[in-house]
Length: 427
Image (cartoon, rainbow, N blue to C red; front, top):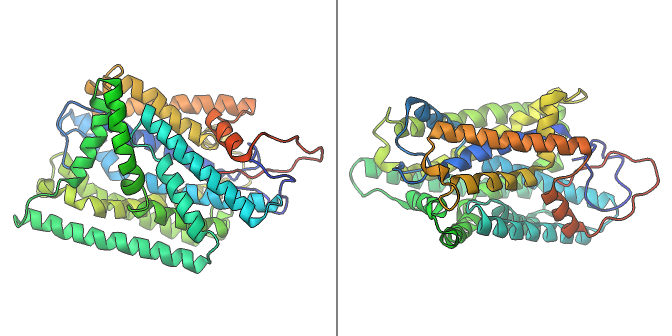
């Protein structure tokens, strides 16, 4: 994002590390903490799990509290936020390239190349480390949605986002009716959600390197196409709303959109947390009535997660409003440094988690409890924060960002000798 759209850079290319709007980067920085907290429970193999989600059904009181908090506030509630910011960033890249003099077709070809590269990055990530990779899903959705919608009107974006949300809501109603039928004893439980979870866990529980890689590559297409892909609706809806919000600079100029941000933040987070609470209480044994039908209620949770993820983004927009024109301070500066290097820090999470937690590595996932794993996840995130702060002080981009930019834009050109201006980010 750019701090001053009246001063575009003189040449096309990737953005530098200066002149960024704080809200999206701070949101990405916190989002990466939520991502590692959401992903690491899948490493807890070799023990019984519930009918939906990654969390074991055993553990200490502290473990149960951690499980309840994560189910209520994190599970299925982070990736819509990630997708929204991804869509927002695509529009900002397009705007920057057009301001630099590229034609509309040239700028879109650049976006297409970048999204194809994200799919390739995701495939390598899945093959080597983590079958639940999201880069491939977002790259694939980006390819389709940029082609279909980036030239369309605001009204079209909102109509199709509404259609996607409506389809998801219809599916949620049908799934909820199925769950009620299961609870009434009229049909057998649907174990589709549990099957997907089992596939994900198989990718970390196999002690053989090749077997684990095969399991990851079995899981990855499901992730890319269904769970977080076009078919799952949540990601494309979030990206379309990100397109719309970027056109109106909702996160760039939050002071112009306070009412929208407040309504979205309060409403979305309230919906997400209230919808997640019954699942959390059922999982830890406080409520038993929903237990046989948890998998059937997975789609309603996805719908609630969409609302919650958008609420989280809006909350960070309001934080950006408070920070506008003020020093970020140590915490804000650290989160911004992580947000600028979100691709590197996301991949670093897998690089730190998989060899230590998976069965083909040290196998700590077969030993740790939920609370210990959450503490481990926070430690991993803090290491990425430390790295990002050091890189920020050196003025260095993350290596994954540098590689993506070089492959997208080509070798860097000589900088102009004119007085530099604030450069927008490429997302």
